[in-house]
Image (cartoon, rainbow, N blue to C red; front, side):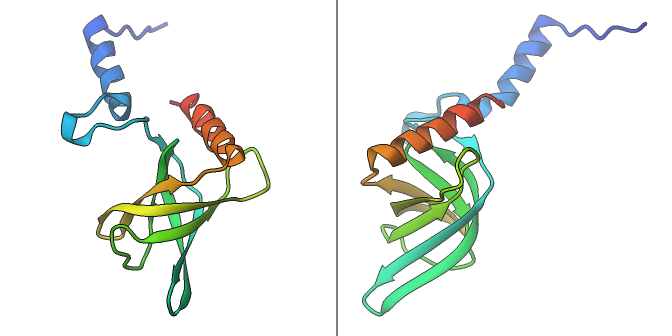
Length: 134
């Protein structure tokens, strides 16, 4: 029977790779909360002077402060949107307000704003649950 033994230094190196998103980043890009990979349908509605524009996309990751997603549209930084997405432990979609904080091509980073205590609890619970799968 063959056994696989991994040296302490290899194990630490591999753990570092697996947890690289949880490691503190440099001062210019530090994050308040770790991000968790999270894929679900994401709907964004932008309210403007000419009515509303709704776009469908896909989330990439989430944390307590915001969510990242892919959208085939163009929004400016600072744009305010209403987001809707589902989380694994409830059938009721999460509906929150957010602001576009960063953009790279069609990948957007949204910061949640004006969260209700219920939304905060739901998002925190989702992040804790996703953290169990790291």
